[in-house]
Amino acid sequence: FVATVTANWQHGQLSNFEYLMHINAAAGRSLQDLTQYPVFPWIVADYSSETLDLNDPDTFRDLKKPMGALGSKRAKQCRERYQTMSDFYGEGIEGSSPPFYYGTHYSCAGYVLHYLMRLQPYTNMAVALQGGCFDKADRQFLSIENSWISASKENLQDVRELIPGFFYLPEF
Image 1 (cartoon, rainbow, N blue to C red):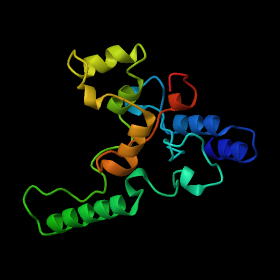
Image 2: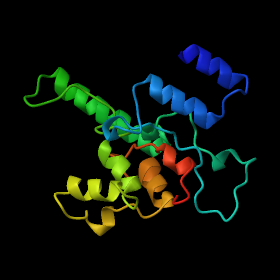
Image 3: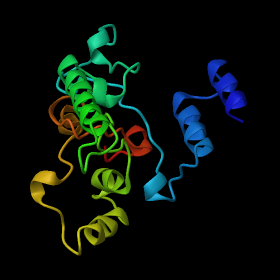
Image 4: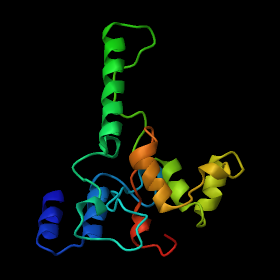
């Protein structure tokens, strides 16, 4: 299935969106399951310019790297954390965990609801996830630009990707 879908995409018989939806489906992801919601990559890296220069490579995210490795500072912090954890684990320090680069995931139900909470039925789901109340205002989805900055630069713990809705819902 994946080989056929990939060949169709390479020959222009599927759009990028269709291809990614098929790949997500092949991975067991579904719009019906918030814990296995489809994942779409950040493509654009410039959310502050009035117009995008499509000839400028800096307009786009480097898709060769995972979110946690974007930018030399972030990549260095991840490598250092991994090395420190590896040292602790290798020395048998009590309570130490096996080393890892990212302490979070690129997709989870909370991220999906974060993006979709202004749309029903996701609003009710987000409120239920927060124990019957809306989450704190400073943790609400504010803008795509702020989310990009958090996930690509400022927050080492934020490596989230996007959801398909960013590419077809007018609310985004």
